[in-house]
Amino acid sequence: MSKGIALILGARSAIAMAIAHLFAKNGYDIQLAARNPDSLAADKSDIELRYKVTVTWHDFDALNIASHEQFVEQLPLLPDIAVCAVGYMGDQTENERDMKVTSMVMRSNYEGPASILAVLANSFEARGSGCLVGISSVAGERGRATNYIYGSAKAGFTVFLSGLRNRLSKKNVHVVTVLPGFVATKMIDGMDLPSKLIGQPEEVAVGVLKAVQKKQNVIYVKPIWQLIMVIIRNIPERFFKRMNI
Image (cartoon, rainbow, N blue to C red; front, top):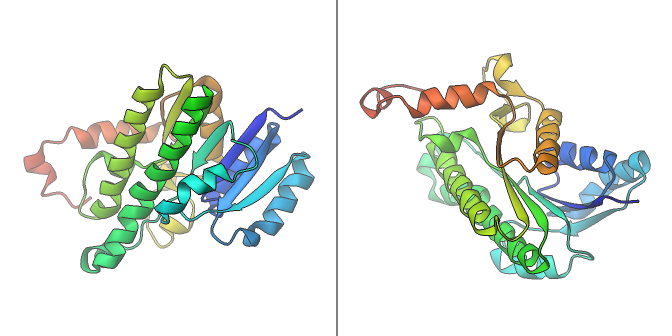
């Protein structure tokens, strides 16, 4: 018997697919949502065959804000868990110089994810149950020259999730903020990074499942990132502004 339904938003990313597989392995039916969802045909079949669960796919555009209410209304069943893995980092230099790209980064990491989770939050609140999971980033904990546009959007999303959690805490709807740090995906291709700081998509999935099961509020996928960010947040601004990190 199914444990419930997990909706995966932004389902084509490596992190999203790892989460879909782990939740399916643990008995959840899966709703995969992404643009051009027919591209997920092989993934849908794979998950169904591996785990003997029901998998559906759904057309979802995070940046088409006007479509979000209809998207939720047209789901065959309202999910028990919704995981938003939507995001786009881009290149900082291009982000600084091309305002269209700047807007896309900000909308992909804040406006779109916040909008769809807000719609789902209203439905979950009306039902009186559910769990919302947002994949944010440690980049949102302090602005840095190397990725402050992406980081600023993630900062907004982190605060949004915190406020949503506060609002829904007495409505039997739980909200989880996930702060992965660097993860071995296309997003960090070409970066020279210490291996100890890089997580795998499967580690993120394990962290998300654990957070949902134990009703954790904010999780750092690799504990070392919590220590790193405590240090970074507490560097005095007069010194921090001179650092190239």
